[in-house]
Amino acid sequence: MTDVRDAAARLRDAARRETYAVGQAVRAAWRAPGRERDLVKQSLKAAAAGLLAWCVAGVWMGDPMALMAPWVAVVLVQATVYSSVRQAAQQFAAMCVGTLMASGAQAVTDDTTGALALCLPPLMLLANWSRLGAQGVYAATTAVFTLASGAVSESAVGHRLAQAALGAFIGVAVNALVLPPIHLRDVRENLVALVRDTGDVLRDIAGGLREEDWDAQTAADWSDGAARLQRRLDALESARAWSRESLRLTYAPLRALHRVPPTPTVPPEDEDLRWSRVTGQVTALTRTLAVTVDEHRTPAPPEGPVLRLYARLLELIGDACHGEADRLAGTAGEDRPGRADPAVLEDLHERLQEGLREHAGRGAAPTAVLGSLLLQAENIWAEILPPDDSAEASDADHPVSGRSAEHREVPLR
Image 1 (cartoon, rainbow, N blue to C red):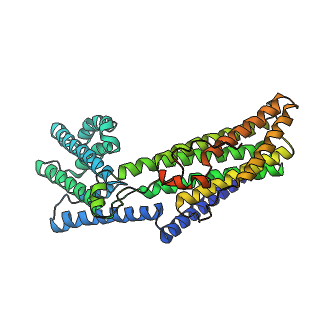
Image 2 (cartoon, rainbow, N blue to C red):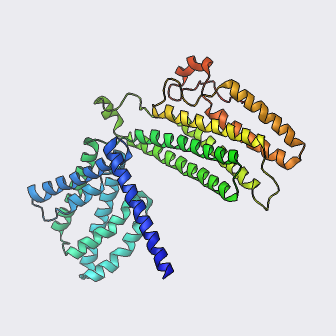
Image 3 (cartoon, rainbow, N blue to C red):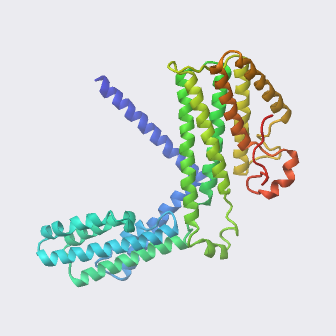
């Protein structure tokens, strides 16, 4: 009985989470442009393409195979125009093969069951052919539909293929001409989320170190946070690929219609590489902290004032990450949030170096731990440090990131 109650409680929790997530998505779609609103637009476009295909094929043309046109049109309203065109070609080829093989199998066996047994095995093998992508399975489903409907004559085959071609044309046309999907915003949103989450993880670590109340479970939570950063990075890479694909076949026409700027306003790919390096350093930092509280390992965490100084350094880095996120999102104020006072950083670094020298007298293990933590923090800071006042004039060299082209690393010394 207890297991049943626990399962019911988990089911209710899952339902609440899903309901909350749906509510959040609806509010986001209503409130401002974003991925949620893009999904709504694509869904409505797919529905409109299916309805238009039915009206043309079934109402206007009165074709008995009109079902094929809306079916294909709905499927081919894809995330990009290029993918719609590519999948239209793949799907039409698969449907042609499926229809022809089903008709041939019916002619040979003169029995629906026998025809299915004859044509389905090779068609399912064909579904795994990389040239057809995910559309290969339509060869088998079309064969089943053809044989189940009993329409295998030459006229029926011609009607079915003609309606499939009509549906493909309407689906691609609607996707290309009605609010064509351009995924430039997805790159910026994913990058901003990655940068902001990096700041959150570093601030969480700083808070735990400052209070000195952390243990193995806390370190595991920090490691989970670093793993979430890696998933964010993967999402950014996927968004970058969608961004490039969404401009194929559409960028020149849209530019002629003044629908997109002459240069797509997305952060440069150097930003992805920069934050990939930061994510790697944060992962290494959390791994080092996890090792220090592992009872089966030798290294011990630093203690006392030096630990609080290190927490302050991570807090400054976290604040700088939030400032970078605001800059990338275009919401940073004139005071450039995230900029730290160089004098504060100089003093903080000197005190941490003194703490490192003090730890050197306590043995190799604590010195190695503190040295590793400090090196990882410096590597992160070198990647995200905003330009100082002397570099303001060089912002034009890197208009998207606001960093000088000559800027590489800025140590905390």
